[in-house]
Image (cartoon, rainbow, N blue to C red):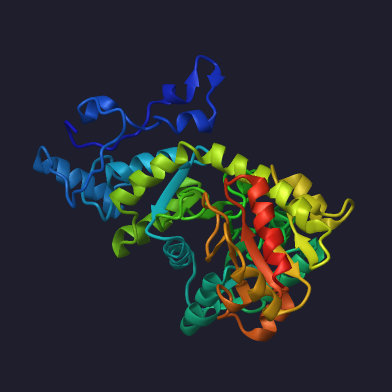
Length: 427
């Protein structure tokens, strides 16, 4: 690196003439100039805590931007709690998938979610959210933020416009609604949220100041769902999952408008929680194959779910490709989704004993939490990721003891089917 400045991409990198380049193409080099790094084809890993200023006046100028004293943000590298070349290049690339104005990356998905809440929610406020949510997200809302006088109202993931209207009306009687938080598909049931209905309900409920709509897009994003197209303001990602895609890193991200994410950036800059340079570099590597990996996993999921669909030991398969024609969920899918994904819920006939017998007999699929990796993973949410959710709430949300969550990887589909057939025979 020859001088201290942010590595913002040139506009020309997004087009060749009038031809707009696809995000999958731009993952190979967007936002990076090899001339700044001795001609290296790939960005180096910048393992440094701080950056050298050419002049004292530069340091003052950069810190004015970092601290918000001067609008527009920083235009120079300062300190790796604020910015780092690897983090900047990653954010420039990842925002392309949804065509977002801005992206922020974090040390984990939960750091991203928590920082988002801290940026928009104040004591006495109300959060309106869909349910179920990832268990740790529910814990943040119900167990941690509640200690600071923050309340919440929730509605089921598949709620109708009328149910969403009712939830917002109830929330308005309880205090200032400062955030609407969604998760679609819901973890682990795969139920879809009608984002367009939420956007319309918000417009009807609030005359002036509209609370931001943030949505966890981890299960389908960024390839199979782009909820900002339906009116969401912020997309939330566990970059650990499909974006990272190799089960070897932990990270989180937000994409959306610069005006909203600048509020989150201010909290991140002060508290920390930014992604480290090595993890950012690993994610840049992963983004180069994101479309290939997700496409192969999606193709595999179709074949595997067809096998499960009519098996005598399977109660039902919560796969988005099997939604009933004419149903509300199918209508949402047709309007919102670009693919059915590769993570689904498998309800076995029986209960925890049958689910555990199935999981313990797997040979190729790994018994582990998480999703979106190159390998196939399977787990029992009621006994693992969602065990902290009260039992009565799990029951109400369909997170039952016979539920197995499966994330299909990039192995040979026929081998996976043989593995699952063997595991079902073990019940």
